[in-house]
Length: 307
Ligand SMILES: Cc1ncc(COP(=O)(O)O)c(C=O)c1O
Image (tube, rainbow, N blue to C red; front, side, top):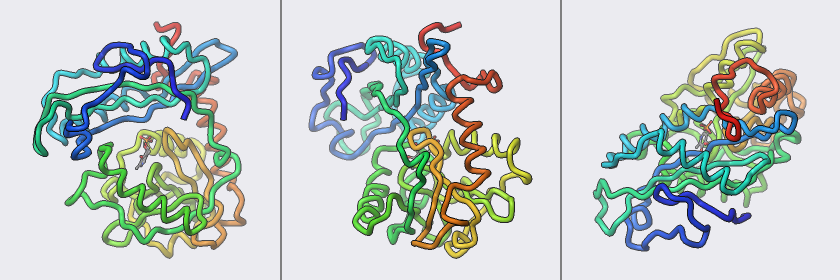
């Protein structure tokens, strides 16, 4: 991983090496952390970087802290200011991935609600080639965490133990990515993105009660598919065998963007090429996030020339 020169640490811009957490902090001992993954897109023509749907990510960070019962006075305005500051401090004029993270600091025990520590990192991150090429996917034998055990709908660092196990097994089995099922056997999501399929012209995605992260990109895609597809998106349970009837399928997320799925369990999705609705969605999505169109300008936060 490339190391940025500066990070934002507890509200200050500091050199990378100075951002340190004690080994006895509950964030380390018990995985008591929440975070966000936000993309910034560089628009060369406009000489500007646009952060995509910053407000929604900051709202989710507040919600994650609420669910985890952190006692804190960290506002979205404070996090936003440090996001802008850390991009500027590193003079980033390229596509980036931004990670704000909040953890339980100090040396408390498992149920300590604070004090909190927080940081923001911004790293260069071009699109993965999988956005163009697509991915081959297997259904994992690991189940997605149910809401009665862990809060899949919030972005808690500890949730990613579940995704790590599934993703590592998937790699060993020769897949690019995996799909996890819920504990009731319905499709949930991948370790880092949400799932959509298209069947007979109708987009379908697991509902937000299917043990998924309440994804910002998923909400964006549902809205964009409303303009592109011939039918509105169905948000409902999907059985494993229904995957094998998909004409098109793709993953979506801030980090993974829109990645076409070519095969599931080695069965071709359609003709095992990115489908026409997926390609149209990608065109629309990338024009929008990079600020090439002016519609949904409210979703874009400029970094260098705000206001
Ligand atoms: C488990 C999981 N699901 C879905 C997503 C997509 O969420 P978003 O679109 O808000 O980035 C992510 C990535 O952040 C994720 O980690």
